[in-house]
Amino acid sequence: MSSLPSKILNWGFRRYVRRFVRKNFNAVRVIGQEQLQNLPEGPIVCFINHPGWWDPMTGVLMTDLLFSTRRFAAPMDAEALRSYPVLERLGFFSVERDSASGAKEFLRTSRELLKNPQTILWLTPAGKFHDVRQPASFMNGLSHLVDSKFHGIALPMAIEYTFWNERSPELLVYFGSPVNCAALSPDRDARTLELEKALWTTQEALAERAIARDPASFTTLAMGRAGVGGFYDFWRRIVAGLRGREFQDRHSGEPLVSAKAVNGELI
Image (cartoon, rainbow, N blue to C red):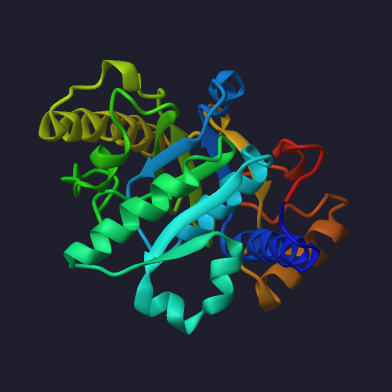
C-alpha cells in the first residue's frame, strides 16, 4: 500500500499535469473512451505512438481521468530519471537504452509490475519520435510482454498534437480496439507485426478525425486557454461589452460548457 507522502505527491503531480496541460493546449479531446468501461479485469499495457515530448504527461493525464483506479507505470531513460529521481515515486522506472542488460531489466521490472491487476503500463514500442501519419516498426519489448499467455489487456492508443482554430494546439487521443491476446501468434516476430498493425489502424483513424477538424466527433475532456491575449483581447472584450454581447475568446465559438465532466469534474 502506498504511504501517505506518496499519495500526497501523486495527487499533487496529477494536479500539476492538469494545470500544465490546460495552460498549453486549447482542449483535450478523446475518442473511444466508452469502450474502456467494458474492459475485463487484469493489468493493462497501453501501447502508444510517440509524436512528441508531451507523451508521458498525456499518459499521466489519461490515467488520472480515465483509469483513476489504476496504478500508473512507464519506463523512462535512466539518465533522465537520475536527473529527476522524484519521478520514481510517481510510477516511472529507469531503462538503460541500447544494452542487453537494460532490455532484460526492462522486462523484469515490467513483468513484476504487471503482476498487480491494477497496473496500467504505458509503452512507446517504437522507441523513437514519429508522426501520427507514419507507421513505425516496434522494438521487441512489447511482444515479449504480450503474448497468448498474457493475462491482461493490450490496448492501442494514438495521440496527435495539432493546431485547429486557436493559438494553442489540440491534444487528441484515440483508443483503438483492445487486442485479443489469446489470438496472438506464438511467433514473436509475427506477434510484433500484429501489434504494429493494431496501433497503425488506430493512428489512421485518429489522423482522419484530426484532418476533419470537427470537435463534435470527440468527447472534450478539458478546455484550456484561448484567444490572442494582451491588448487585442482586451479591446475585443470592450467592443463586445459596448455592443451588449458576451465576449467570446474562441474563434470557433466553442463554449467552455461543451467540455464534459470526468469523475464529476473538469480539469
